Image (tube, rainbow, N blue to C red; front, side, top):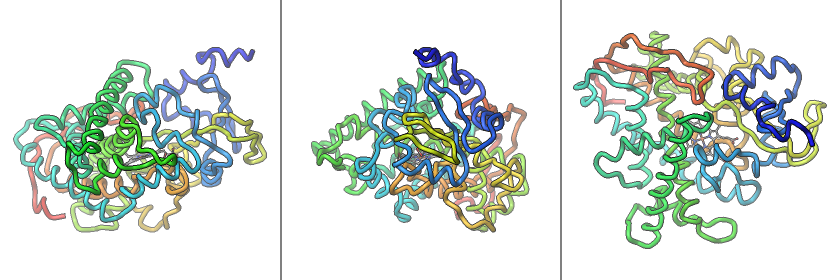
Length: 421
Ligand code: HEM
């Protein structure tokens, strides 16, 4: 038997955990060419990047998701039975449910407005506090906003612990330590709570608006014509709530960007709509978030004349592609202007995956993320605050990366017409 198959410690898994976002770009530097090879979790793996690789990767004749996700990722980040691990017609039907909630501009605007309302109500409260950790406060604001929008009831004092759990599910997926175990317990709690809610809605014991996310997911029928098992419905509801709350990482990065490059503040604080959109795109491109996505080769394949055997783990390097000097002018410079002139190429900017969201696994939440970042960046640019001494290091070895301090502000005072957007 192949020695590497038996022990995950003889392959690159530990190196990935230690090097984080730098692992895949480094691997590609050491293996120039269309395909970089490694072993991950005891399995042969290939890494691809670039728009052509995106088109290859998101073609289901090449790459499928069934059996590709490691258990620790399912038990923290995505949940068992989630849309992320489905293929073919079953995937498309489940995905259509997400798109019915997230592709309609009116629904996206109402989610953004729900978050704005909570943010605006929080500003005077922050003004009373000596210091505010932006990442934590953004998580609470986003949790309250998305729960209101989705029809998830929150009792008094519930938003903060629920926000902590939603953050823990994301923060714990790629680390073997205590963060991972916090992520697992947070998921168990979250799934149990939302499965009870789904049961309550189905039995008529809990009333929610007919077209809110809870109602849509509770009455969704899979390809077999059956309602989702309550636990799977809870998993999918979490797949709306959790990534919306994960925008708190990007919000902390917005704080970081306004601090490092303060010239952005005036343009954002004014009513420059196209600039806010370009700024949001540059935050998504520049800062580290999802490192890569992975699937399994569906057959014996060839990419760029290189063989890729059936069953091989195929990784698409999202972070590396967003920083590739062959694709981006001066990729390590933070320059929102690049998105003012550039026509959008869906397979070039891939912080949330590539391809067509309706037929493939591309994230259905991109419009939500861009909408939230536009509005939160404008609001942050209009706040007056000082940034005390703190550790603003963003370690690429930590997944998910974050400004180490979470970005501390003090004191926060409303300035100007804060409530007009
Ligand atoms: C915080 C910012 C976000 C990032 C960095 C992000 C990133 C991603 C990535 C990398 C994927 C996987 C693509 C693939 O497998 O090829 C994905 C899938 C997904 N995302 Fe997001 N996302 C974000 C926000 C959102 C939001 C706001 C929602 C919903 C409200 C959402 C819902 C989903 C769902 C349901 C999938 C699974 C799609 C599928 O498998 O077909 N995401 N996201």
